Length: 141
Image 1 (tube, rainbow, N blue to C red):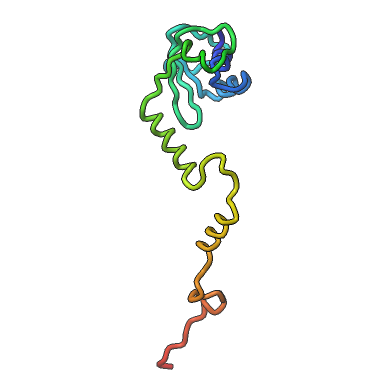
Image 2 (cartoon, rainbow, N blue to C red):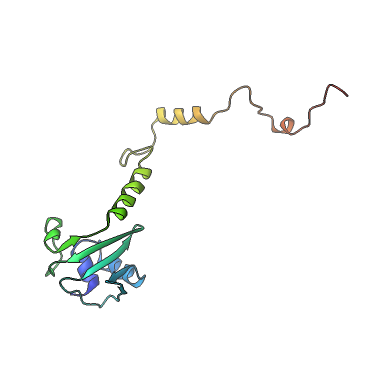
């Protein structure tokens, strides 16, 4: 099976076109060799895929006949991605969810007021920038 079709059938990419585009950008390799979209995948191949700034590694256990359901994917591949790469992925996801978790949507009025309150200046601070840059007269003059 061609590698673009294989990556699509194991649901690594949503469409075959996306898979071929990523292969053309040299983000997919078998072993240490960059591949073309027509490269045939064999059982036992180790495929390295660069996606979302993470290097995923998978080992081919079986060649599927066509695209399959997500529950059947582990029968055809084994994920051998290094722990460091998975930790890096988890750290990136945590940094994205720092303030708002995914699905919480836009800030509420209360959140907005808290942000505005945080950004407002105190009364003691100078609001008139023209006077701020003038040199004050000393008492000795």
